[in-house]
Length: 138
Image (cartoon, rainbow, N blue to C red; front, side):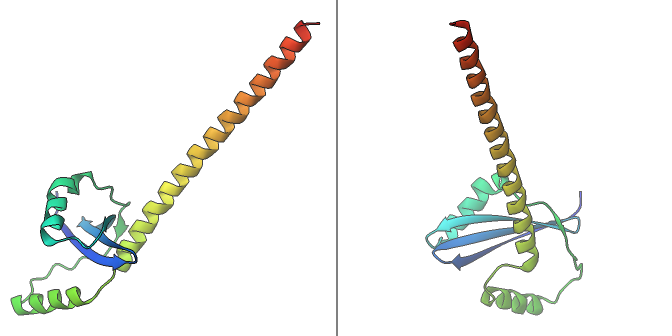
């Protein structure tokens, strides 16, 4: 198994605080979105990660470029600071979440269509049954 890289971005999307988990594995990015509600404390976030990380539903994987270079510790600190200032979700994560949303929408439509078809078949059978009963009574 290859290297897995994961990060959590917590940002405010009016009216709730939202966390986006990004997981990069074998050059593919998958994302999961979590709504926290009110602003989560650090201990609440770490507890959420420990208890619920494995039950998250990640989106289908999207190809992404992974750089494998060692960085100077000071540069890493600057990059972390820059990322902390930069609010919002990465575009790759947005693509992955959109893909997941579209798949869920397709599944909902499919289930709804099947349910509607079953209901119309049931009504048709009831009408046929009533016609048979009406003709038998004559």
